[in-house]
Length: 168
Image (cartoon, rainbow, N blue to C red; front, side):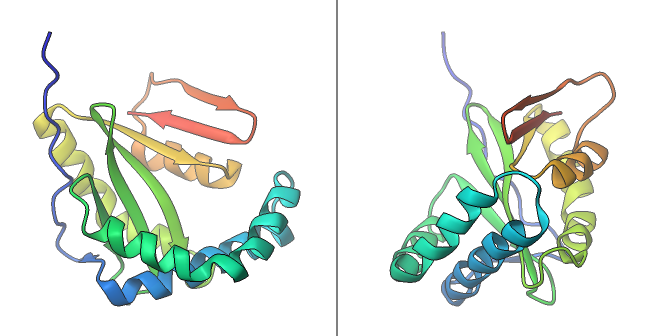
């Protein structure tokens, strides 16, 4: 039995690819995202608080890891035209996984605007190649948005604790 090679998600007009300088920006946005979750989410506050505190001594590692990921062959980071939001699409288990949704100002619709640019062409490319698309988030609110944007009717949504996986 052979496993079919899955291509990396394509470049999308209107979205930029991440550069090395973006690694600093995304590391900072992850810190902002942890604090946003501490203040605004009903679940996962303790974990987000711990991650927000642990971020400070480890931020150089965040930058190094992201820089290495940008050079990898199994994912693509899509950055908004104004460089104020990002979403990553990773090749995993024969599918594309939409993950690492970060923005300059969490909760202000910046990520939604980026997904409006990226979503339709990404799903079109996935359909053309017969590739499944998963969306992964720890946020129930974002899971609902992903369900509207990425999931066809008839596909189930599963929740395991604070992790939501949506499949198209």
